[in-house]
Amino acid sequence: AQSVTQLGSHVSVSEGALVLLRCNYSSSVPPYLFWYVQYPNQGLQLLLKYTSAATLVKGINGFEAEFKKSETSFHLTKPSAHMSDAAEYFCAVSVPLGGGADGLTFGKGTHLIIQP
Amino acid sequence: GAVVSQHPSWVICKSGTSVKIECRSLDFQATTMFWYRQFPKQSLMLMATSNEGSKATYEQGVEKDKFLINHASLTLSTLTVTSAHPEDSSFYICSARATSGRVQETQYFGPGTRLLVL
Image (tube, rainbow over all chains, first blue to last red; front, side, top):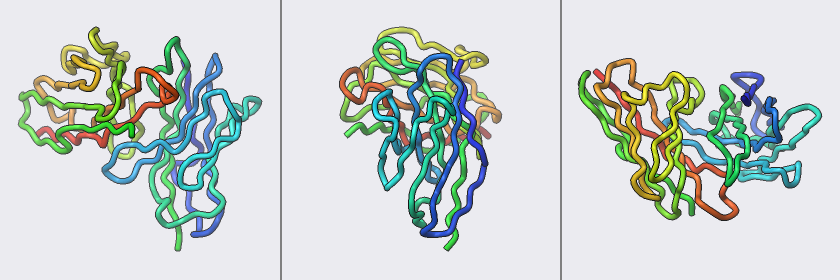
């Protein structure tokens, strides 16, 4: 079975500062990895995904993440935080099966706070 | 593209009644849809995997007789919470995975349905 650990339930950064949200995974086979963002009372929006191609993945809204197999990590970064980035961020993992990926296993989420 | 809708977005019901939630993929066909449950300030927990034309696969601890799932077409899956009780109050989110193409590995999420059982 796979699992995801997100370090830090809350992360606070100043507007314009670097955003770093940490995600470590556990999987017995090479996984697919995802970052989703959730705004209050809304569903999840895909930020980016890793599916065994390039290890550095660029997503929407200036976010990117790097898959590091040796560290079993998939940390999310953004060079300069914007007030609109304040939201809940979820890292998720799935194990590829024939024909596509399985249901997602989510981390507990990290609430990103942007200080003006 | 890849839009998933859910209906209703909000539902309040009395204890003992049944509630049906619809999940639709609007611009793509979805062989597989997933149902998740999210409690306040917590992560999403996979409840079941719904495959078009076959029985749903439930995760351990999820009562299949209480949470009935039907995936009758490639664009519609429904979740019925039968004999709902206050402890069933939660945010229910569906996702859909396209049947083919480059987006195959991605699940696209609906906006969620908030259920409150009185």
